[in-house]
Amino acid sequence: MRAMLLEAPGEPLRPRDRAPPKPGPGEVLIRVGACGVCRTDLHILDGELAHPRLPLIPGHEIVGVVAGLGTGVKAFDIGHRVGVPWLGGTCGICEFCASGRENLCDRPRFTGYQIDGGYAEYAVADARYCFPIPAGFDDVAAAPLLCAGLIGYRTLRLAGEAERVGIYGFGAAAHIITQVARYQGRSVYAFTRTGDEEAQQFAKAQGAAWAGASDERPPEELDAAIIFAPVGALVPAALAAVRKGGTVVCGGIHMSDIPSFPYDLLWGERSVCSVANLTRKDAAEFMDLAHKVPVRTTTQPFALEHANQALNEMRSGKLQGAAVLECNKEGQN
Ligand SMILES: [Zn+2]
Ligand SMILES: [Zn+2]
Image 1 (tube, rainbow, N blue to C red):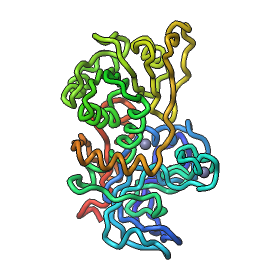
Image 2 (image 1 turned 45 degrees about the vertical axis):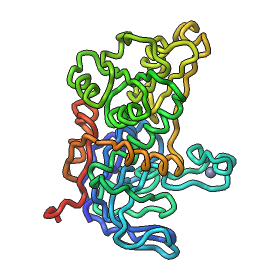
Image 3 (image 1 turned 60 degrees about the horizontal axis):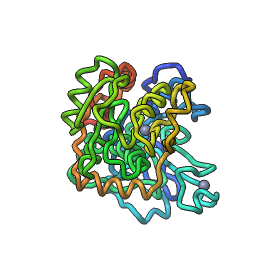
Image 4 (image 1 turned 135 degrees about the vertical axis):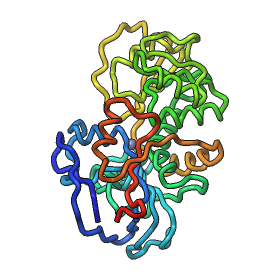
């Protein structure tokens, strides 16, 4: 099979031919239809997340069809369409797993980080961490739901009952979560890089009530803010925009250092928290919600071989919506 491999952090991915993986006990072999490109992939490539498996096939927004079954798999059969998210495995016995917080597991395994992911024609995954993909989404449209949508949804949930929600960084996660927030009757205020009018228009097209630059004050005080951009300086900016009792939720896995700020910004029972990973319960809830809204993803498809280009465009902020690799496009084999 063809795969895009990370051989050393800091280097571009290399196209390689490899034997397709074999599903072990409890695992499924998946013919990958599409795999989303997530900012976390960039953090792994850049060496900002330590100790990836090497060489590594990145990619943790996998949508594909079950093409082989390891022993003991009951939940899926050959031909079923499944999704594989970032959470690829947990220990099941630590105090976090035992208390319904498997996202915080002490010994987790993550797809496209410790486990080979979906930047390839085939992938294997632990069937217990895969889930069905709702009808109504083709493979490319569904891929961004697997992380941008899912972890974005967890981030929105941590914003509580907030009615006026600010979103800093309007990429793949924000465009999905804006639709979900609107469905829930909330108003969204979108913050982009200064002067990025295209992104601001895109945010409004997804249902944002207001869009402006991240150093602007919104027209009303916010009840909560979500930060998807990996920029620590946005934390004090967001705190300044939320009202008393408001929450600032950091939705990314990595962020540049947060500059010091006056206590006044935190005073008034404001809080700052982060979101880590996902639980399988989040996945089930969100996929059901995505179908109900229904979420319409904006995607930019790339051929598997063009993964580096997709990553570079994400890095430069050129993309609208989500980049998705088409890993088994007909006629490419
Ligand atoms: Zn991700
Ligand atoms: Zn655990």
